[in-house]
Amino acid sequence: MRFRALPAAVVLSAAGLLVTPGLVSPAAAESTTIQAQPLDSGPVATKVKAAPGGSAQTVDIDRHGSQLRTEGTETKASKTLEVDYQVQETGYWCGPAATRIALSARISPPSQADLAAQLGTHEGGTDHIGQVTDVLNSNLGDGWYKTREMPNDPPSQEQKDLLWQDIVKDIDNNYPVVTNIVAPPGNQPPGYPSDQTIYHYFTVIGYDDANNSVLIADSANFGGNQIYWLSFDQLASLIPPKGYAA
Image (tube, rainbow, N blue to C red):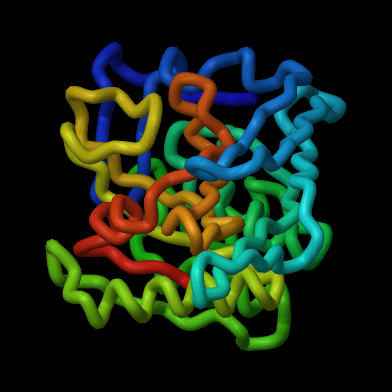
């Protein structure tokens, strides 16, 4: 992995994530096994294997299509996707890394460097989720993805309902969702530096309707958290005032 030398303090940009080398652990390149587990549900095994060079890791998430189960009279569904996971190679390549993870569910994806060039990513990050949408569609050639803005903070119930519908539809059709998030102190995914507001991109690669949760592939690797379950409500609270590609 390569990281740009930065001052000791974390530097943040509204367009993307900048981190010091110490916030992305070298241990990410080691072979390990992650247990991604929905709340109060059976485990989903995630196998991570180091590739040549140490930065690329193949993540195979056990899945058997949409898994249905009944609770009372209501049928609940869950599904996760197989992706090729990588830790972001610079402190400001969260956009390229999240885009690459999403593409890997369907094609052999370009490198993070190639995607950074396609996205117009600079040292301040990737400016807008619409750039991610365009690059996803350009590489896949099918026009599936659309940009969804979520300007209201907190989001309206209508916006939350649309986000859930988009996630379920996309995952059911083997398209991961790329989200642009803002994570302030007090509302952060696991492992994030609690005294900083983090501007970031990560990828939704699964959902669990029974537990109202989503599976996140997060290239930042904060505290070694690469693949983890997050409540849907928290995801919805993290996206405003940004947006997502679905």
